[in-house]
Length: 251
Ligand code: OAD
Image (cartoon, rainbow, N blue to C red):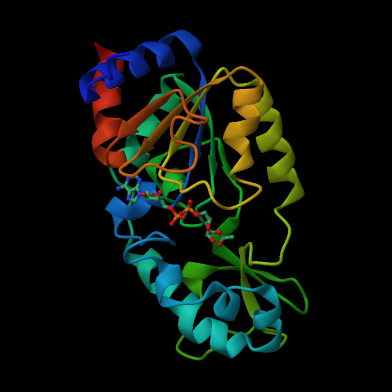
């Protein structure tokens, strides 16, 4: 069979989005790369710089919160304080408001989908915008706390931690349940910028596929799901591909 060109894939995907709407979406770190947020794996990946076992495991945080705040969380906060939504986040928000997509399941903790205007977002790995005290559970907003002194402390003296999922922690049960429900019912899933290597998030497109959904895979590199799980692989950066898809849908 003749392989399709980039433009043919865009046209075919736009047609599927119109026919099978609302699509559901799974995003990973790649969608935020064009916002200046590095991915986890590969060139410039966070896990190339910091061993996650050393810096991102909940047991390390419990034993040595100063080390985790000082190295990993400080870097994430400094990056996310500057990050703004890019074309891909904005295109998804527009597609939601015009009914072409419904829920975004994101593995990202950067809040950029909501900043772009998306309403229905499942934060599979929690978020970095809020924190709580490990002692009294008092909630805090990340933008309101100072990290001049590490680790940041609650008024009660307890240590603050971000509401993201550390290695060794459970996925918030509500998020896991809802994501699986959506995956089992959706007719079309658009997967953007994930290496699909971390479970249980990586099983979401698989559940969708087993239940008869079509899967679109948008990534500048092939991944484990490319053409094994996905029906169409659109090889490109999220910003470019999503802008092209938005134009093709409007035609
Ligand atoms: P990864 O860093 O594993 O993968 C990022 C993917 O984005 C790769 O497949 C890249 O090819 C792709 N990519 C890079 N630039 C892109 C661009 N401009 N447009 C589209 N795609 C691009 O990130 P995730 O798959 O999100 O979990 O990682 C999953 C989880 O692993 C994270 O949520 C995090 C991490 O450990 C926790 O911390 C719990």
